[in-house]
Image 1 (cartoon, rainbow, N blue to C red):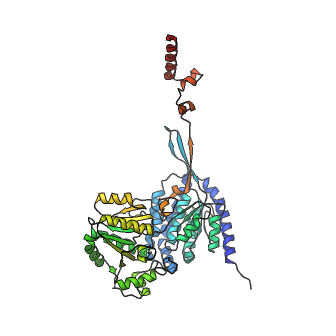
Image 2: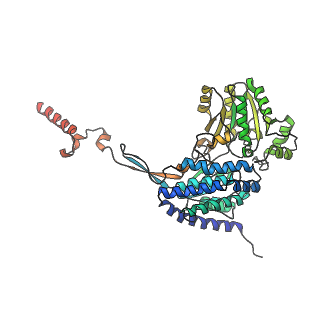
Length: 488
């Protein structure tokens, strides 16, 4: 009986895909802006056209989230991202300042490795393919094994559309036999120029340890502060809209709510009215044992599941129509599940004496997990909003908006993206919402504007031997010096 070595097959496939992607990228790099734009438009159209089909596939295969919400994510990745990037200059001279005598020239990075999570599989592929090709790059995807089929189908659909629009074969590809060894080979391959890592902390860490430049994102654990001046009804609506969107699988979604003592009762009452269920201490304790695995990582069984499913798994009874499970909490730490990232409709609820204490609590939560990612504040007090913006260790301060949709740029004017940088504080190479400009290098052409005499602080005129090259001002200066000498 023949033994099939899956790892070797995966590694060999990666080498073949990267080789083809390298050749394809050379062709992309020689294309005009118009040719690139045509391909990007084709990817966008194909993604939008197949948004529902791919959404249904993703839910069926992964068991995460809601396919109707995944349609919105696929459409966002296709249309919203396209509308933002369509007029960007990413080929040739992209900026020129004639007065300062400097020009900027876009240079593609080359072959991009795209790591795809199971939480946002199809939308991530559409988005990463579009921003990569927009920058003149090819991309090879490493699918999450639990979402392999829907990811590969997405690659097939958009790649076909891209080729029909003039894209070279092999510019958009994916590993059909995914494995840890294959992914490692992809990340470490000498012809891969950059890794776009979206996934779990272990995968992102592996990307940064690969020796290949990487753009990775850490976990989200965004606290939402409802300050006393806020429209409480609207704030609660936005939080619930966000936390229930695709059952909380977007990393920018709220993970905890922080309120002031003076408005605690009003906030609790409003959450209950809108479908929030405050668990008893016993229920919260029972669920807490189910949120984390023994190794301290999030239990994948809760990811993207409905409150009803989660309650059944944890053995607790909740009212019909419950939208989000809420646990009152005071503690923050790795050993306290509610203070950590929960990619599910589960929230921690903290109450503090005043906004200053609430500010400190938010910082504690972020430093525990999610530093560099996102914080949400609901308030009408601009002074307090600015205080939060100045002090929080995050890359995004979202004001009066749902976290999930605000963080990715759907409900705000941030760059529309499904990869959100966390900055140095979060262990990321950038704090940006990742777009095409993060996937190109800038070659700068500059003309000299000063001579060495000027840098030394010397009179340029006195050291110049050719009077014909001097302007009238310099000639007058020489005449004045000669007259002074004659007088002397």
